[in-house]
Length: 123
Image (cartoon, rainbow, N blue to C red; front, side):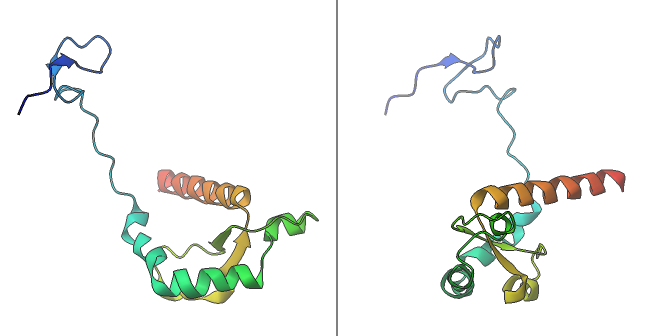
């Protein structure tokens, strides 16, 4: 089996030759696993995929935030009002669910993450 030809490292200005794009010195580091990786499995469970998510979208088919602004925008995301952070009871609590459009969900999530990072920096 033939080997790949040697090529310059992808790092601009690096003279090292490599077969896999990056020399050992400039190879990108693997990102650290986020806290959420520990509970991502919850979104692949039968209770979420077949019961909670579809049920919430049937009960509340329009975005809650858009409705507060007088708009009727179809909801595509089921969001936890209070972030569950891996707490199963909070995850399956139907009163903790709300339907949002993707725009409002992304904005809410980004705000929560920024606030959490800010709290971590202060501590």
